[in-house]
Image (cartoon, rainbow, N blue to C red; front, side, top):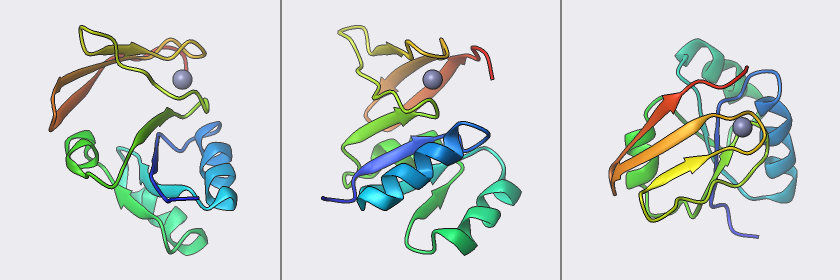
Length: 107
Ligand SMILES: [Zn+2]
């Protein structure tokens, strides 16, 4: 399997997704807002890239899929919006290089 999945968030649920995708050999990047949290993942998943920025993840052409921390693959609609059906987080893709998290949903 190609390593082309970025997991957004690696907290309580997200770390399970990180582990799952790492075991599948598909984990490309772990995204979290906290460099401290990311550094904890570095020891466990030395091959995975770590990123605090959504923009840089989106700009990385090696990443083909976005997965919310819940494990749900995000599909962006015609308005470039995506909502995780599980936790309710709303994502907005502003451009190829710019994506923002609009709404927090539950943690
Ligand atoms: Zn979610």
